[in-house]
Length: 523
Ligand SMILES: *[C@@H]1O[C@H](CO)[C@@H](O)[C@H](O)[C@H]1NC(C)=O
Ligand SMILES: *[C@@H]1O[C@H](CO)[C@@H](O)[C@H](O)[C@H]1NC(C)=O
Image 1 (cartoon, protein in one colour):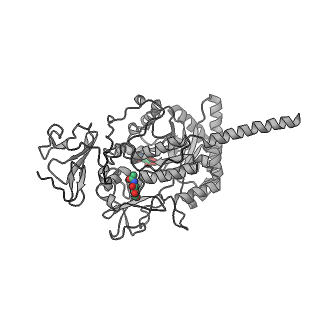
Image 2 (cartoon, protein in one colour):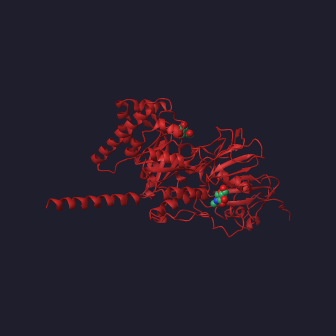
Image 3 (cartoon, rainbow, N blue to C red):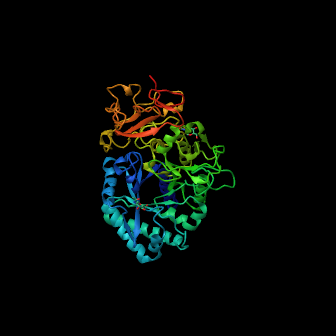
């Protein structure tokens, strides 16, 4: 009788264990995406607002950022309340979506965090008021973006761990009191091992957080005077500035794959080379790259700004670092390291083969969200990652590397008609025709050869001084020649024309849809 009872217990225990193991390995993968508050101030068409977010691309959206002021969570912007409401209203379109409020960020500074975590009273003020704020504004959780605990005060590490423990307890109490699903707790953590050692009690992160996003990018940047890869997957022995080393360190410290979300950049880093005769990784590059036309920050470019570089000739210099699996190239003396769909796919292989919880991407505004720059449809990078993450749920880890660009991610959780209408009106570019070179596949969204006929050409094309008007034959999108200058073309985004010059002495060929050496507009 006793033996039988024990056997039954063992059977039940095994059943539960097996169930939970199954649940863990079959858990839905996450795609955690950041929305920065300041991209609303970029010049069009780089302006990125909440309405530009596709609610079906990511599983988790993080609003970046809010701040800590006297132990309370506060917004940054005069319009944060409105932005938060719009942000959380994305869940009306996609009820599966989870939203988190990020607190901290690069420019926040550590002092308000240090003071908040330092005493039990301050922590309680923060925890209680934050739970209330998240609930009243409709967020599903909080994302800690403290850069970085332990940078100047050693006790941060322990106090941050205590905060997380107390926050977890409070979140569970609130959930059982209200009967609502518990708020999510997450953090974005440093990639540098030296910094992470001082900052994090990793077992505490693993125990109290729902997931931990490692910012596995910015290993190299223009704080160094030589070119380097921003997010190398691996590096030669002895160089631990790479994704694999970071991930292995965190796992060695006790971060489990089920909590590990690996960071991916949708932006590139750029340098101005000392000389165009040395364009290798590690080449002398004393100054940051020229600032992007829309992002406006020296040494950094959005993917869509990089597409302009590619289009203007950088494709001819494009290289793949074999160990790092990062793309790099140069346009004249501008040297750029970045991720494209292929390199992201390689990183996704790594994430899925290791059965990590998913991927994080910084940030939504850096992708070609308009589809006007890369000729790969809207959100080409996020769509590529998103489809891998969604397919991973079905257990297929052998998805081949995607070499051609998906046009848009198919919404899997709702009918297309329930999508939030994003402005401007959705126009999916036609699928690229088969072409022999990548240069031409990059430019496929515009009208073919009829752009200069009276019916579709801009109304004022005849008068050289009038502003260019985007024709509506493609719904206000596409590439069009300048009415009089052969070396200039226009990228149209929602009827907004952006004037672009061809590189060198090349000219825009409207039929081929790109700039060409020796092309002449005559006749
Ligand atoms: C957005 O958040 C950052 C902190 O991450 C803050 O410094 C900034 O003032 C906020 N607003 C803008 C327009 O950048
Ligand atoms: C990504 O860049 C590499 C070179 O670094 C290139 O071989 C590959 O074709 C590119 N992939 C796409 C989809 O553009």
